[in-house]
Image (cartoon, rainbow, N blue to C red):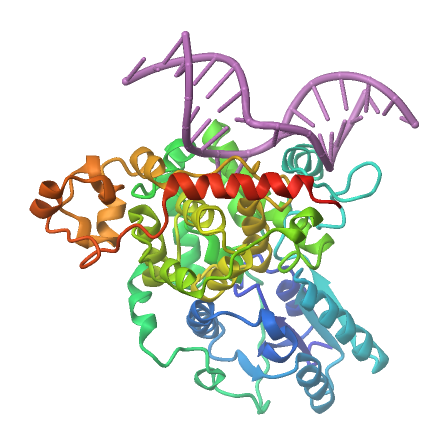
Length: 474
DNA sequence: TTTTGAGTTGTTCGA
DNA sequence: GTCGAACAACTCAAA
């Protein structure tokens, strides 16, 4: 019986420990570990450029961990699996469940088609602490507000599964499976842009666990406060690891939980709760990446202004903290959480551009681009989402900079042309006296842009647009 | 069915 | 400089 080949299909679970489907497969027979790059099924949600770069390195590490026996395929997953199953008389296929709507549809279909051929599919939960269909209100409908979702839904449900060890005996299948080499999946960009990402990240399962340990030692102690300051090292930076499943949320949850019971720990656990909430929203609202959760926003008068969008994307808005964030994104594939809110608020409220434009740019540039988190968060900042920020809550990027980057370390790092400006003026060069600008070597409109939109007026414009919305029928 | 209390992350203004 | 209130009502969750 041990001689039979079973397939473990790696997807968003690029790790060997705490991998429930892989552990189950290992008990069943010789495991053929595969990865399929299925852009055909993903269509408009196919993986963005920065994430592809991450994926390449993550797969490389995983393959190494599996003694080079991970097999790569490209194309329609149903066809790949069907062919493999026939060619090698595979009777059992294992995978950990995914929750993006296009994957749910695809996987369901694969399951049915393969069942018709007598092939057994076994799926496990390797990506979420709780299944989205289990966390329902007493009337059996999904939550729309975070706090009750987390308190009544998550915390009063069964505790998350404790992490599994690596499978004790993992026999890997050998043979010619007509796969393509990793290099030929076309994951790496050809422009050299990715070179700036490299120094900021350690990729793969081992690195992910190291990151968790480093956060436990250095970040957690002052997490609740420190997480707001982009120059501090209090955020976990685990998001890309969690997205690709190099680390499971269970491993994070239990490691953090073991660290004690203070408010920093509670706060971090609730952030994992937000991840669950985003997945629940996406699972129960498959249109979340495209459609306003609050239908009244469907008539919102977003502006169309490609030049303004380009300036935001390039970090050339003339608003220092915004430009710092957008350049951090471009250079590192990541933005600190608070700065994500600042740049998001600026795009949606000050520039009055569609949140979907922001979402698309983030999707391409973030190494942690995640359909659930990205969609839910953009809808939140735009005010059209679940439990969203009230419309009058518009971030003032000057105040935010002064408050959360008061020494200017973060902003000066990413906007070096302003590095000599005194703290007092760093976040508002447009109000800086000419003499100070001159001493600091700043020439507005020449080596740093003029502010592209008046903050006060654009704030009022946004408030008016939101007010008008309420009066609109429907 | 009705009622009640509550709701991630802010800003501005005036005392 | 600091502090509290106003901002605007609405939807959600649960009793």
